[in-house]
Length: 80
Image 1: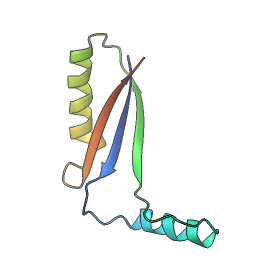
Image 2 (image 1 turned 180 degrees about the vertical axis):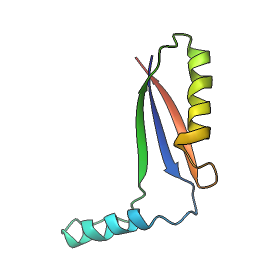
Image 3 (image 1 turned 90 degrees about the horizontal axis):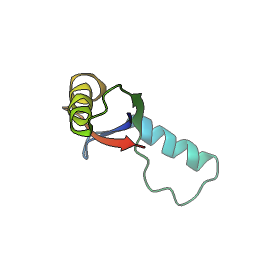
C-alpha cells in the first residue's frame, strides 16, 4: 500500500524558511505572493494491505518520528 504523509507547521508557529522563500520569490520578480509556509512530504510504501491497519501504522510513524507534534500537524493520504 502506498501513502503520502504531509507535515506542516501549526498555525502560529514562526516559519523562517517560508519567509526566506517568500522574500526570494519577491526578489525574483514574482508579485502577489502574500505568504509562504514550507513543509515536508513523505511517500511511503508499506506491506500492509488492510486500510485500517495501515492508517494506524502510518499514524504511529507520523507521531513518533515524522512530525514534531509540538510544532507540526500531519495529514495521511492513502494512494491507489
